[in-house]
Length: 185
Image 1: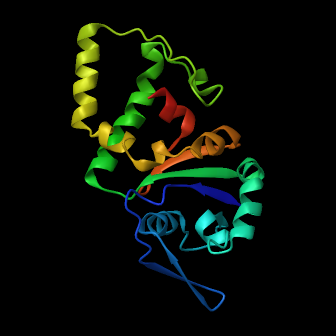
Image 2: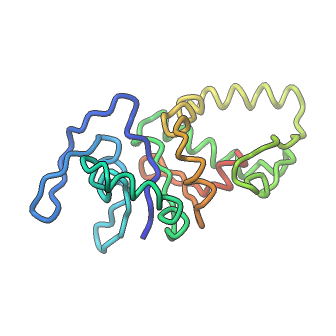
Image 3: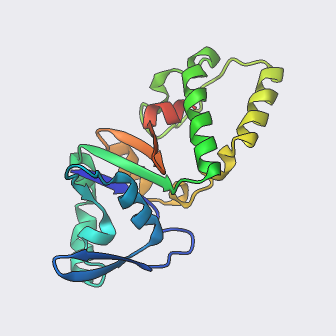
């Protein structure tokens, strides 16, 4: 299975409907968008999402499930970090981040930047002041600030989800990046 790491949203409205085992389940727009993006049209994909796999109205079940969250995320084949549905801003930002990750080593940022995955010390980078100004300008033009201001980055739970993942993939809409490349960027 793959686990979805996501935020319910800045102002979650549970206005999307799933039909599971002849029952109706209300979920947030953000989770619904993630499920639509992660679904395969031609085969089954096993996804784990807390709002679906944990009975949110049963306090005992929620408590039991919270105690095994580390197992859930560490045993997942992949953790899919869902940042936001596709938009011009997120697409521009993800494309910019992918291009920047390819250039990261030229700035002195190695793929080891995410070891451990929680970055305790920022890497020292080698870039001229002029190149830094251009890079910042390009990042602003590509709406990177919009992408990294998504509510996913403000969740405390992501620390556990990110550090325990065997493989971590960052997604926005249909665009994806592995975590190492994202961290390098």
